[in-house]
View (cartoon, one colour):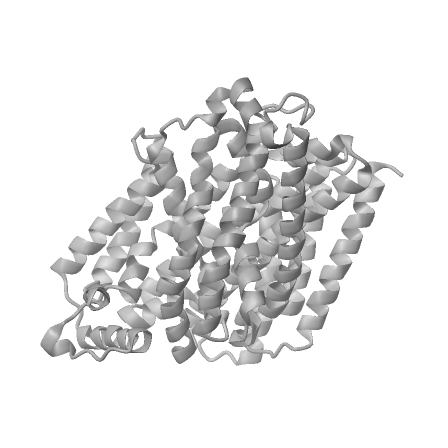
Length: 507
């Protein structure tokens, strides 16, 4: 049988398994936004660990990051280094997000922002920025999977067929099973593409010379093994990807979905091994080892985002088919959560909040499902634009950069009682404006557009908060006092001592 036939056969088996999981999950669903978006807030350790990892790592892991390592060399190892921070961020930010999400039944990040800052406008800002930031993130899942399917079958399966497979299937399973189906499917897909990545990494290591592989690369392409000292690109990568782990809307909502903070604690222990050592370092090894002569036929810088499909094009068809299925698994496990999150932002934070406040739970769930189908169609249309078919890491970086500008405002609600509504709103506007101006006018700076926006946004947040006051400051103080008591078991007399969280930790 031809490569195309075998690939379609294996892919069909994989998609049927995923459809069975989604259908089984849908039988436990209840027609409420809480259940549809957040799986009833009942995710356990294994599912929580796998869905956070699988939703974050995607086609840019199995394709884009490998290509980036090939083109840029070891400096991009920041891709692995920042992932260690995820364990810390899950506990510092995740536990806070979980607690107030559970207490107030929040669905989106904007729900918490409106409650804390008493600002419907801030909720709207979070929703708009979140949706815009998720679009490029969703796009690379569809384009990456479609390009791999096209590449491995020697263009027998056209790009547009790959887009249809990715887009329509994701739309259907999210429509059917919501957050529970996404989480259960992520667990299956996460294990699947994780083991495939491990297999591919070991295969590359063997083909490139075994334990002497990196020594050989140092002789063949020493510039790849040398840190170029690109501090600012490393910072840009670290900020976007590290903070993105909790500020991206679909990741924030994962914390709402946990059964308890103990689940988050266990997840934080497992996450560095899953995120750093397997995903990030596996991509690093493959990208570097691809420089070994003859290992990847037909490889150039231009097609380096497709190193894995190119590598397996000379192997028995079954290997390539499994690789494509793994890449598509990586894409689906990310786009399903991102699509669900985008729908929640559009429906919960915009449509219901401002236009249909009296919608019942059943009606809200129906609107959410219709929105998912519409957004799936829009994303598929965008996937045919030439700009969406470029290198995956820059496109993903754009999504992270857009959402990164929300960090200062979120930091205030979660960590700093001195932050004000005016400071929070101004920080987002200044951060996004800076990013857009630098991108549109191609302004050359030592720092990237996202980092520049982030720095200016944080300064704006601090200065703006110091210069303004909120009328409900006592309520905000009570929120932080409550957090300190719940997380650290310490009582705080706010009016007498005004102790900050950092001061308590030092004591």
